[in-house]
Image (tube, rainbow, N blue to C red; front, side, top):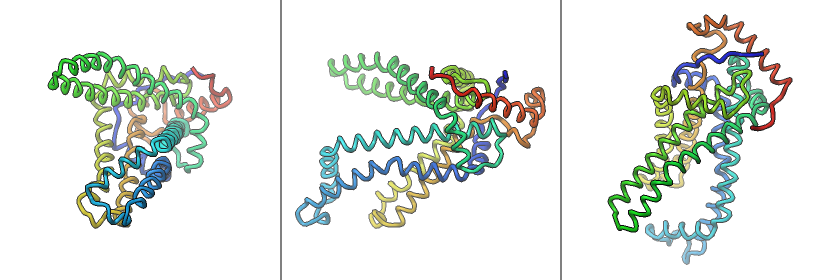
Length: 326
């Protein structure tokens, strides 16, 4: 069954916030998963730091404030291998989880008309499309690596020449250009992946590479709406992430206390809401159920007809299964 693609329109942070509020169970799951992903790193650091402080004559209380950072650096240097293993395992678990819930949210909205759903059912929907969205993520990472290499390789050669000529000002300029170019490339790839994820969810589309390229084309054609939605969610996420560290640095009495821990937990919950809201901001303009029809929707038929077509197409794809990875 051929299903035509219709433009989803510009991203909408308001639409993303509404969907994130409807997916409160998913927000809570993302919040818990974020802590589980960094738990191995925290465990290694706590054990390493604990042994280093215990070895100090007189106990941890005798460590001067200025010596504490040096002591921590030395402790980490002695545990690089377990720390690297913990970091890689945490990143891999977080990646697999993100792919799962992205696939589930897309299938939920495009395949069922965004009907009320529990977390377990949402994740089961995502499990059926996990491999497809893993290919999309791998495509994005490969594109980022190729683009970064193409931009940074000539800059690296110039930086080596400037370093050999002791041209410090030129070296700083090149480093700034490299950092800026890398950040812009990462944002462009991220936006293309967000758009491609929703395009990949359309019935009849299976190629992760083609979906990502379509998302990139749309991102380059209209960069400002996507960048605006990204900033609307990323700026609050970064701000709430800095709340607990800044309070701990400013107020010595809060360090290690229950209040600071609670502030950190609430900040991470707000950050999880931002992640879900950002992804949902790139969803179609209106819900397939109960939404107001725009010109595109009116031309394509009623929302109920679209739901029936989408569900029939999803059922046909379920019967056929995913093709081999490409």
